[in-house]
Image 1 (tube, helix red, strand yellow):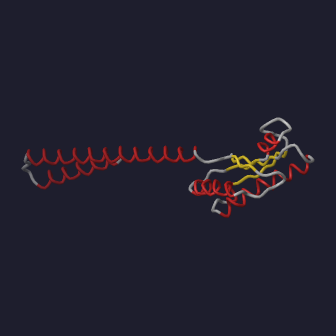
Image 2 (image 1 turned 120 degrees about the horizontal axis):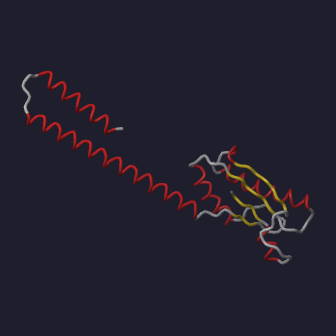
Image 3 (image 1 turned 90 degrees about the vertical axis):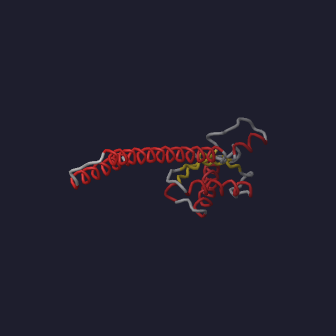
Length: 172
């Protein structure tokens, strides 16, 4: 588009020069054509550099997103955020503040306790993370909270390791 503007400007100048004088000098026309060609080449180089910069920024953003944690674990019967979880959520909040994408926080619990209690516990865990993100600059309207309680275990089994994997919130 900028190349078209440069060519229009060039031809407009050439027309005015041609109308101002009946005598045209071939060397002046050649110089003007060379200047227009140089300007068009410079504009194309600038456009290519801008595209390369945008591609590099998009790759850096994708790489940063790949390094962010999206699963946060909790202690038994707790909905409090550990120091490690808060540190990871700080990185998430910094990343999320720059965009407008929506996210879903899915709360989970292990199989111990009643179904209703585990649904409420999963929701408290997801809300704890949502509130932390909101306090750190992520808009509330972008966050959806849902609890699956014990209904979607990550690990099957009735041992401490399985229970620990199932007490989580997933950020999607």
